[in-house]
Length: 163
Image (cartoon, rainbow, N blue to C red; front, side):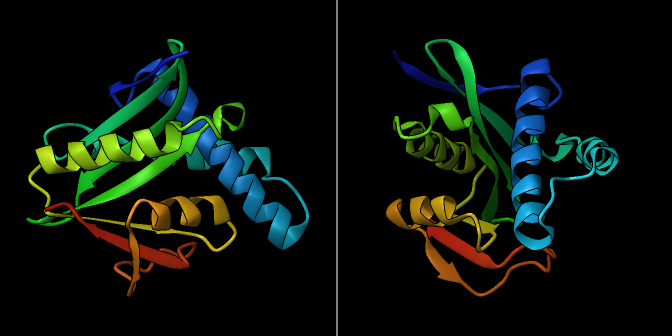
């Protein structure tokens, strides 16, 4: 099977399905860790709907979809943060697709997309319980930095030079 990564409209059915899968997984992980339960279905629907992904649309952003054997397998988004910096977000692979090299390919494609947006540096935030993500970012040359936002769920901030 072959991986491909290509831009996708943030509001396509494929993008919506991947956003739902991503948000469900990270939300459920947080609630299971902190409250011993999954996300309340009403809250899940409200939060998914509240974050459309419009900030990942050209000209200031890009949403990328990874496909494995032609089937949607994951996503990553980049958006301009300031004149020289872009932010990496929504990095996700379906659990059944992990361990096949797709995550690194997806992040590298996102770095290329950030360069195309004029970014010289890429930043991101993640949570402490997302150990796999933090390991991936470190492996790909991201270094922990001071916080660049005050997101209530962010616990680790990373950056990487794109030059």
